[in-house]
Amino acid sequence: MLSDDDKEQFRKLGYLIKPAMIDPDRAAAVAEEIDRYVEAEPRFDGSNIWKYDRLCDLIVDPQTLAITDDIMGGEAFTFHHCHAARHDPGLAGIAWHHDYEQIPQTNRSHTQLHVLHYLDGLNGTVGDLLLLPKSHRSVMRRDAMAFLGDQLVPGTVVVNDIPPGSVVFAHSALVHARRPQPGGGDRKRYFIDIAFMQNGIQWPSYGREGWRETLDAMDRKLHMPSRPTLFSKDNFFDIADGVARVHRLPGSLAMLLPEQAASARPVSGAIPIVQ
Ligand SMILES: O=C(O)CCC(=O)C(=O)O
Ligand SMILES: [Fe+2]
Image (cartoon, rainbow, N blue to C red; front, side, top):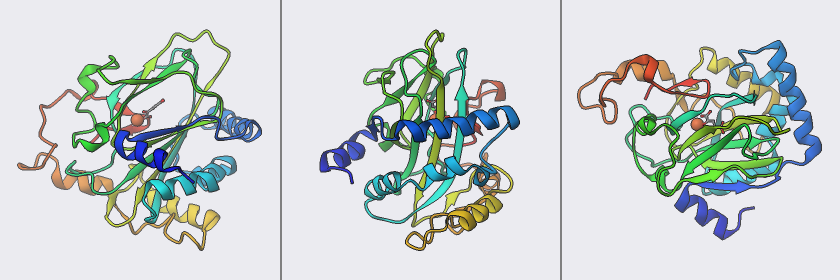
């Protein structure tokens, strides 16, 4: 599915952009579903993602799964979570961070992927995506670069001109930020992120109570005999147990950076940064 150049780009730089990968009718159907729950369930955090048929379709989209196969080097992988949001003008930014789930942060031996959908593209009016190529190879706390806010650091790639239906495949350890923009355009900022973990190690679970039930419901709805572990619970340990076990433990790598007040700590989407 991916060319050798694409695979090489992902390996070296940590991301790959597929412009207009989702066709307009389908993107419109997903956007409609998001509009529906923005009204009905404004605190939606992905826990009941199995209730949303169009979002579920995106998670098991054949092209997405085939590209993910290539990125994972042919190894099997497991779904971790899906968030979806409609970002309106005035949306706050998110400081530089990464979303690689690991407690404590120690290595990058296995791949974790964020599939970022921008259903209406990005055009510089609601908020830009900033990427720091090659940063996925460094081990750091998720908020280690948050002190820089959303300043352009050397090497920053600004993603602010991609057509509707575009998908950004980003290694979860790639440092990235959202730079706010004042609005004024006619596009909305529909944003969906879907995370997949390469099998082979135990990963922290999605940070919501009920993550096991969510995976069970997804498996009942979407089980694929050719991908038996796609919605398995077996590759996860409970993230809260993991944090409790290593927090403040002397010798924990990348856990003992200077303390920040809770109010100064960034959140990454719906997930509070805990590691
Ligand atoms: O809104 C975006 O483009 C990125 C958001 C993000 O990085 C996150 O939710 O973790
Ligand atoms: Fe993020």
